[in-house]
Length: 364
Picture 1 (cartoon, rainbow, N blue to C red):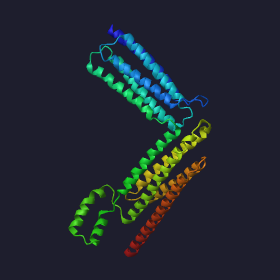
Picture 2 (picture 1 turned 30 degrees about the horizontal axis):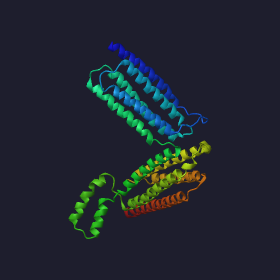
Picture 3 (picture 1 turned 90 degrees about the vertical axis):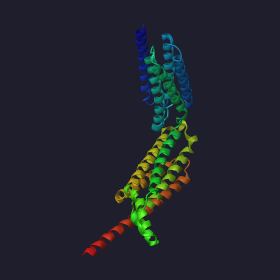
Picture 4 (picture 1 turned 180 degrees about the vertical axis):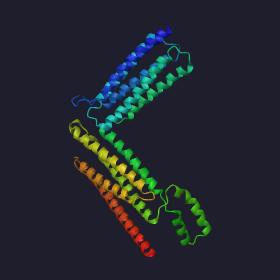
């Protein structure tokens, strides 16, 4: 009898899983703009219902083996609630751009994945005397709770989703800034400075040992390279300001995100995010090229790309109903830092060529 019950439960479960899989395919399709948009609050409330159903599942396993009918009824109630949750989630993507849709899909998929694991485990544990299996069900119930609770943190608007994505870029750029500030001159330069200051030779030797590990890590820059690194710090620092002001500009337009704004408004936001991510890539490239030997050509190329991106950003922001003067000032500041760094690079190249010419003259 136990084997027949288990087989029956497996068939019932597979039927429900197939239905949910079919509904999931709907989420991959863009809903028609003519459909009524479902508020994210409704999705969250339905998520709470999924969480409650998971609690009921857990309660079935606190005592003796539950009756087959009770398990089947509970399973049907759970998957009906889950399917309603998926349909509402799809409705919430009306007017959503790629970034918001991606956030919604990720949160929804987490709820579905946890639900599948829970229901599959309940069927697997049915009739088992293994205490470890029965302990696994409460743990999986907790996973469903967490996934449903995380829905409250999912962005509900395009602006919020894009703002968060830009914040991630800002964090990455700040990491590059921190690494650049950790760059140090070569130990030989430190030794020369110590000798000029009249420091004892023994102390200079200790200083060399202390910085030997830095040299191995590539933090051994010549005076000319340090000047370029310092100018790069200015560029990266000003980039963080640009991204910060861009985020402020976008979040300040929360009231503008209305249905009558049309897809063009969302497209503009998505373009700004793409440009922001592109500038993050160029900053990573810039930071990587500053470790010795510094790649001057690659650095110049990165600076040119950053300048191009800033111009495109300004063109998009200027098309909005309200233009941000602070964002414009941030862009001007970044361009000024780029100009300064390009000047340092040119001076470095001139100095390098002069040094090589001098060496040729001496050898002759």
